[in-house]
Length: 366
Image (cartoon, rainbow, N blue to C red):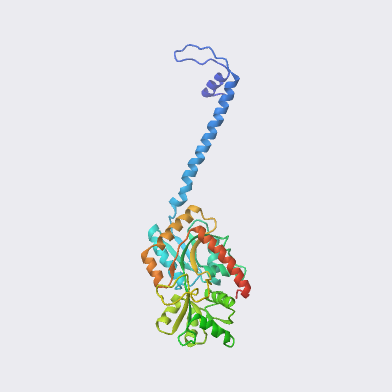
């Protein structure tokens, strides 16, 4: 059965003459077969135009939507270092500034297990939506996979956001050490029975790896004494049980202020404002031996570019905040920032360098 609407179209298609507006019949015009072909082409072109317009509208709406809608809930930053450490403290300082600027809560979760590998693996496996991030120290993040198979890939598993700061390392000796300069320390080590004794807060830490690079570059014999953390290193260094250490400014500062330790050099590009009289390792004649002295924030691989760019803008914006700069400088750190692409290249280069160094010194995960 055909409906009234269908009948009308059926009558037209069968050649029945339609009525004009005043009720008179009009003779049916002869059909040109070319007309049908033209109509089909026009209809096809119209459908293509509609589809293209629809796609354009969809892309226009959905493209910026990632950046416009993000963030709309709490962000979590995982830190693979214990609470109270310099990376933890600095991450919290950044988070406070970024949280205020984006009007969303940012919480910090510390997972100081397996050299930060647990935290890194958790973020690598998290949803790539910008709500779970990772704060790392480059030396730890890049060296762990070089020492043994790790549950994360520092290059392929993450979308770098930005550097946050650099951690200058101080070469410090006991106050009564016979070495007053780096050159004197290395010369003493070449004549001292058994070589120099280095105190480090653990195998694979920046101080240990930096000392290994110095030993290789200067052919100085060094014995590595590894402790569980920085506090026992400082205790034995003060009493002279070890000859020197490569420590963070924050861990050595109080003992330097108390005239129990003396800094011979700083591993940084320039002298520290807080220690203007202490030369850099380059000035001391050792060249650039920096070992992943940077820290930064990353998201899981696959995080939309719009979200990564938004986070980058916020962390770079925080890095230019006078209050934050003052806090980091007070702790002996250097504020840093970068583009995601710059940090990505840095991570890849650091992983390669760490693999070479760890292979040379034969370091294995404990």
